[in-house]
Amino acid sequence: MSENPGATESGAKTYAGGCHCGKVRYQVTLDLSHPVISCNCSMCGRAGTLLTFVPAGQFKLLSGEDSLTDYVFNHHVIHHLFCKVCGIKSFARGSGKDGPTVAINARCLDDVDLGKLNVKPFDGKSR
Ligand SMILES: [Zn+2]
Image (cartoon, rainbow, N blue to C red; front, side, top):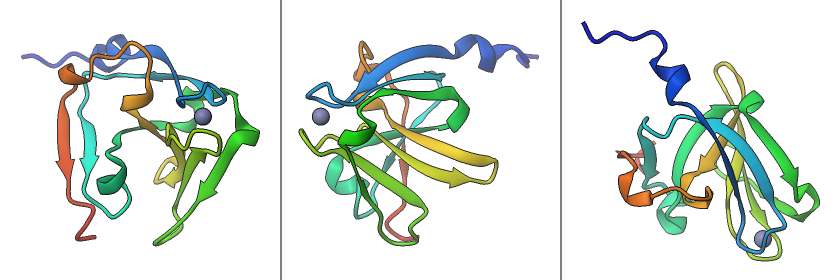
C-alpha cells in the first residue's frame, strides 16, 4: 500500500515570493507536488494565474501591505490583491471552509520551475 501519512508534511517547503517590483514580498509553506489550479473564470482566465490554496497560517506577508490594492467581484469571497506599483497579483485572500485561506499565484514564487508543476484545469467560468 502506498499510503504514507507523512507525505504531505514532507513535501511541503517554504518558498519566497512576491510581485515584480519587489514591494510585495511573502513567505509561504506549501507542497508543490500537489496540483496547482488553472482557472478559466473571468479573472484568472485573463490574468493567467496558477493558484494553490493554503491556510492563512502558512502564509506570512513580509512587506508591501500598504502597496496592495484590493479588488473584489462576484460573491466578494476572495480579495484579489495586486501591487499598485507593478500590477502583479502575487496572492489573494479569502475564506474557506476551514477559516482564512490564502491563494498563492505559483507564478510569483521564487525559484520554481513552472514547467514541472502539475497544472489542473478548473472550470470557474461556469460557476
Ligand atoms: Zn509590485
